[in-house]
Amino acid sequence: MIDRIPALLAVVWLVVAMNLASAAAGVVPPDVLARQTTEKTLQAIREHRDELKRNPSMIYDLVKELVAPHFDFELMSRLVLAQDWRAATPDQRKRFVDEFRELLVRTYGKSLAEYSGQTVQFEPLRADPSARRVTVSASIKQPDGPPIALDYKLYKTQDAGWKVFDVYVAGVSLVLNYRNSFGSEIARNGLDGLIEQLARRNGEGGG
Image (cartoon, rainbow, N blue to C red; front, top):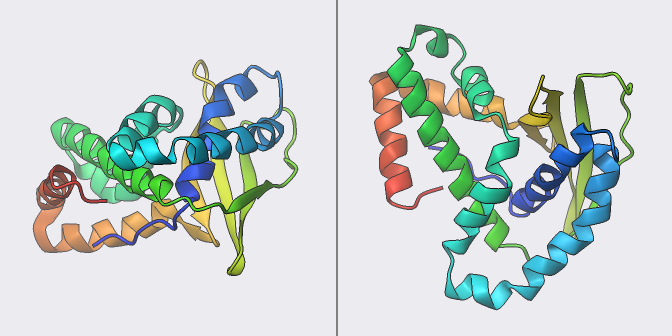
């Protein structure tokens, strides 16, 4: 139903998310923070490889604690569902946001667990200092293939700092990818059918 996000996307997602709160305070630009901490984060993953193998669910706890607070899952849900969000009831919206968040946590957690030594290179941030929406660009360097381009779309909230609301992988939007996939499911079984399918998938440990 849902295309998997390429392995290591979760790593970069984690690196960016861990540093957005500090970047929002104006201490260091987001791209500089991400670049400075990437090596530390990847090294930590390598050092805890054995522990992660013994306790795979540790990945999900890590993502929930460090990553999830820095993504606007409600905005992402609104963008993914588009007109179906406007037609949804408050209960349907809440249930979808909850299941969509869990789906992404599990998907990225599994990708993070597959990290195998690739390197990440961030580009300088090209944005006006007063901009409320920015794109943080990076590329994954692979030893056996071409680099994978990544673009993180962020907006600055009034009181919660920077939040990620979309991710582009090799030019493909995560939001649009899920919108197309979910739209087909909604057309067949309705929004409740989609939510139930996501709940089953998450309950089975799917990603």
